[in-house]
Image 1 (tube, rainbow, N blue to C red):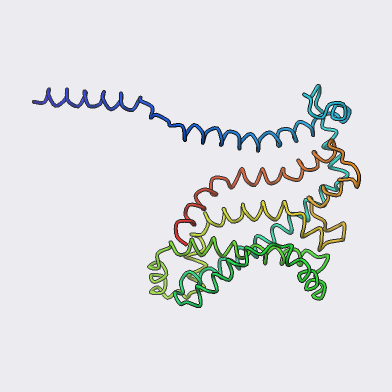
Image 2 (image 1 turned 90 degrees about the vertical axis):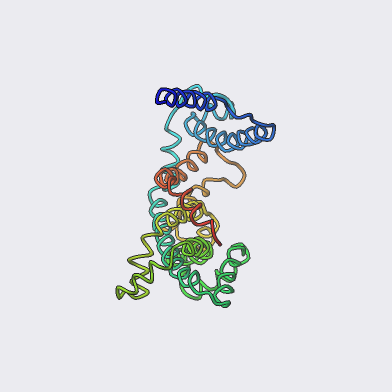
Length: 297
């Protein structure tokens, strides 16, 4: 009896292994999807690779054959762009603006999303919809009233004006992220904290806010890409060279009637280099934060 059972188990194991080795048949739709995905990846990788290669080619080689294979590599273009675009000052300005916008948007967005996710009355739903509707308004529509508002408030040519502008622009997105996430947190956690004598503010800071780390990482990644790459807001609201961001300094290298690729491409590469570092550290939180915050609405 035991021997028969062992033989049956071994036969079943071999059958499972044989079945496991069989690859599922892929239909035409899957192959078409793979081709489209490969083309999309190439459309992203090829321009970036061309930017890197052109940044490392001597200027004479780029002028002779812009699309040719590099005969030699040099870092002279990078050092030249570094000095002409005032990279250190631009990095400091971009970092200050980004840090201020991140802190303000995360704090205000999470504080606003908490009651909107817990209050079940109709007015709370309408307030939430108004915030979400604000994310559909382009900045170009608001640029004139924003300029007048910042001018009258004395916030032009200041970090505070840019930070408040970015906070107002990205606050609807932050509220959407956090409200979706808060609705998945069991209310029993807050009830247990209330039994222990914790008030709403302490419950939010001690109990709930630490749970927001995945969605906060996702939001921070989104805001970093949005704020760091933005050219429009600092170009309009800042005229002081000491406050210009790294992207504005890179844009200043574009001539009126001509563009030097051996200077512009290294400047663009230096501008996006910090983003690559940030994404390398936060990428593992992005997918988890999106899936955890997108299940419910």
